[in-house]
Length: 117
Image 1: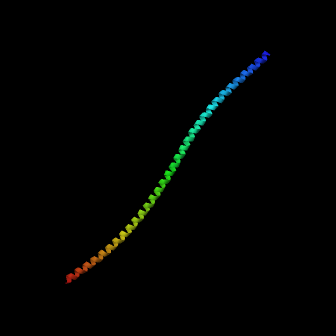
Image 2: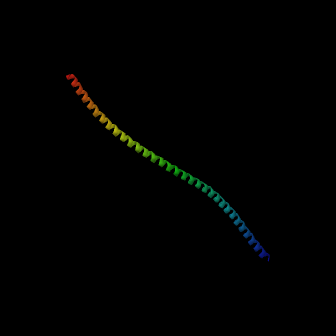
Image 3: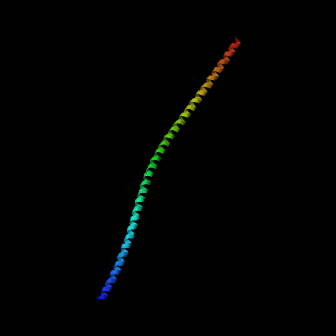
């Protein structure tokens, strides 16, 4: 009977040792799980912040593209106006030169008429 009690006590001691080891292992695993949960919360916060920043940058980029498109259109319009003004200036210059030559001929003929008188 004593031997059987000692065998059972020995089994109980071994079971208690295994139980304590399991408790210790569970405690360390729970700590690891808690740490991982904290990291997950931190990463989720960083991810949301980066998503917000990305959204803001996309909006800013779209605004800049819109502004640059407006600027390109204004530049094209200004270049077209400049070309039209240059064409008009060339036409007016040619007209002026023709009129100037005509007036020069009239003056020359008037001088010849006055010299003859």
